[in-house]
Image (tube, one colour):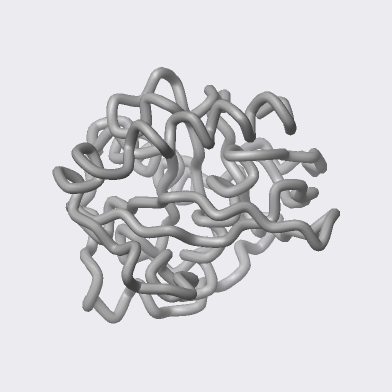
Length: 190
């Protein structure tokens, strides 16, 4: 079922999500929620969606990039379901990338993200996952996990002067950013 994505200003986006009890991961309730997250993300052409974005304060998010029309320059990420995820940074380096958000419609802004991270958590079957993500894709994972801590990308902007509408981004920043993304992908592999 497609759910309503809450918008910036809705208190649900500022809630810190609660961990899912491991014994409940395979329950119908959690499995239906995961299905709804996937369907809602795909319907909105999102690169990811956190449960807090549909006003459910649980530590679950889904990520998928597959020739996404909102982010044509992002490398593909296979459908990934994360429950109770945690991130550790593997480098002190940061890359500055333009991000957008389904909960902050029609805007993009530059955010500094760690380009090499390790992610731990559980998949939808309750199995432990542990993997490294690099480059632009690492930023996508950090963006979704921020939602689980009550943060949106505008909270991470160190300079709000980069905030731009989608149309202005396309006119003034997109070509240069695409070149930057290609360079990041070449360097980090994703």
